[in-house]
Image 1 (cartoon, rainbow, N blue to C red):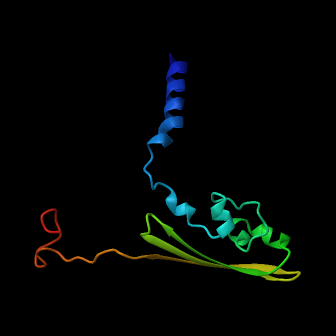
Image 2 (cartoon, rainbow, N blue to C red):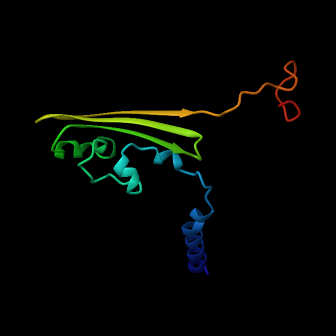
Image 3 (cartoon, one colour):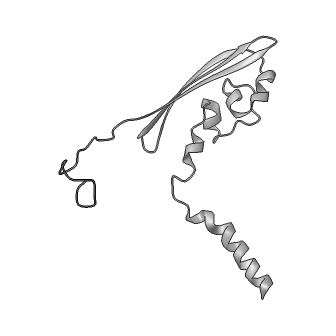
Length: 124
């Protein structure tokens, strides 16, 4: 009985991710790299990319040349814009620099129906 209960609990935990919301964990997909994002958000072992320092800083030492990469992407149906700049610099001693800018547009500024009253379900 105890074994069956543990088995059912284990199966329930394994299938819990099916019921996740559509945007759960999406914030972790906001990483730089045009090639990396085109390959499904990979980049942990791809050294020949200016954004390699974001994914795995050890890969910067394996890069053969310096470079610049600029990326613009829209997320959440165009609500969130991501602008990214990646630099890979140096010769024998290499370094990597990343600037990631996130902006949200199209959010309407509203006022309370009755500014003299406090915020509540009846005053939004």
